[in-house]
Image 1 (cartoon, rainbow, N blue to C red):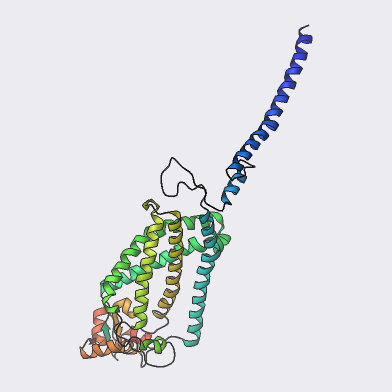
Image 2 (image 1 turned 90 degrees about the horizontal axis):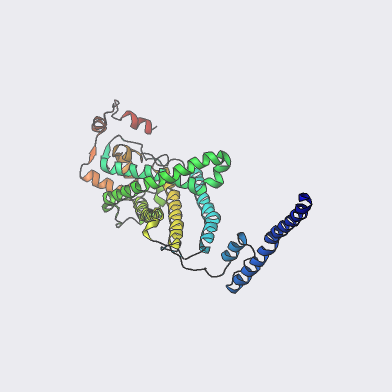
Length: 363
């Protein structure tokens, strides 16, 4: 009796429940979406889907969509920063190709030049007689700046080019470690670069002022072209130009870097994006030219590296590259003998008066 009474009721309840569930799932959302669609249409945004389609419509607007927010700050009123997409595409399409291309081209040019021209030698070879050139403070400042810049260049290139040139070989896990370490190291050593740059500015600025006679350096290509004698003072025009490039471009890199690592200063996203482009472009230019500086200061020019190693340079090297300063050295008796130089450096002297190192360099 009970079963005959409850069975029909139970069937009616199940049918009602199924009908209600289908109504909730299928009918009501459609009505809601239609209402939202009309509301969105009146605001200029078609909302056919509450998720991805909404953001696609907002992103594709011709004008920035602005509104109010409880969080106050720079650009907090922007729902989506369309300019950020353009900056990201510019970084991938332009900056990466520009950076890689510039460094590869300069490296290949130096390699070809070395094969054709070889090392720029000193006429008559090394004499063993030396002239004091750089103090310990000046050399320390130079090497600190050089080593920090080298680290920043490598870590910066990993962040800029790593996704395209390193990740495919190392894999995501290993590359993520390199990228994370590079970012932290880059931010950590940046302030040291600024301090060492200021040390270089105060140490060498006075002797890098352009003077009469420097322009003649250009006529011989700094001694790289032909056999003509180059002219220069304590620093020739090439060295002065490189120095001021390091200082000025280095300051641009430093200021833009401070802006990038200090978002709390209140700059907008546009300022951050422009700073990133300026920072990367200036760094690539300085890295490319520094390859030439490192080449000329080592294997490209005989006797050049000695000045930053010991603080002394061979008088024949001075005559070859800095003839005006060479005359001052002769007039003021600034040249010391091979024996005196060896005593100062704690080196053995051969019977001919040359240090062992000078004899090896002159071969």
